[in-house]
Length: 507
Image 1: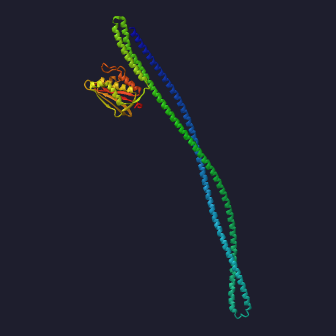
Image 2: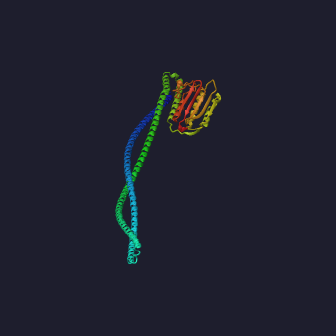
Image 3: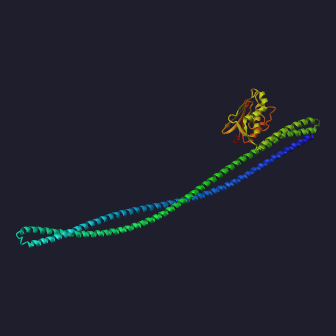
């Protein structure tokens, strides 16, 4: 009696230690949750600071844009001034061309007048020569007249004839004198015209000199305008370079700002994702710990009450103590079995870094089916395997062995007595994820009544001597620990199908 009591006390103490460890774990996770919340607050403050920095950058960028707009307006004003200067320069060039054309016309007219003057001079020289010749003729005529006078006596007889000739000669002389006077008047007119043309030539030369001075002045003005235009062009080029530099700086600033915003958003998204994942993980762990505490308090309370009642009964009826010790041993064995199951489920939940390996599904299943060979032969069970879509998976070996073992064991254990067992095991890819399904044609489960109890510990849905209600619970625990999902479709009298969706990193 003392040994059993001591053993019972040791079990209770061990259980208290485990419970205190669970509570410590729960407190630790709450502290972790608070730390995560403080980290989130710090991250939010940093995000607010970075948003302020972003606003400052945006205001600086707005100022830079305003300055760029001002410089563009200045550039447009300079361009308009430059256009006006170019138009004025074009006008002056046109005026210069007009002056040059007028000067060319004046030069041509002057050349023409010089030629006319030369022609007039040559005509005057010819007239002078003709006048000299006529004077010589006149002298000759006078000599002839003297000879004629000398011969007048001799030629009196021929006077009438010579008189007529003399009259004719006098008329001719008068005509020649008149011609001479006409030539002299023409020569005077030509001289006046030549003087007028020389005066016109001098006027033209003075106008040409004035035009040349004006042209020189316009050329100087043009050179000044060209130098001003060159200075304006240099200033415009400098402003364009400044504008390009400002634009490059603005683009670089925008790129940096966009990159900073993208990095900040990415960091925020990653941080929020981590916080959400960690929060879900903590909530899931808290839920598991609460479930575990409830399971411990529920599943251990009845055996402990039974043991307490048996001890009290032994103290009252010492004669039946031997029989009571046998019952206490049964209760203790049941308590030990429950305790081992709880410890196993707790180990699965805490084993976050379990090693995964590449598993060939057919080899793994065949090694599991060896353990059920006797039952398969006894029930003439039909095992249909289809791993054509997915033949290999990355997963913990012992977890996959346990999943196959529990689900195949349930399919054989809860077979229908009206038909031979048919178990269909296959894998398929659905939306990029691997889904393993194990279907049977057994008794089935009433999911309308038992949907929420399906994966709870110590829940059974059919009368069977080997039913413990632990297989589906530990299977779900193992799948949840690896980030997967399990669900079932079932109908009474038709059979059940269990689906397991593996997490992406395990596929």
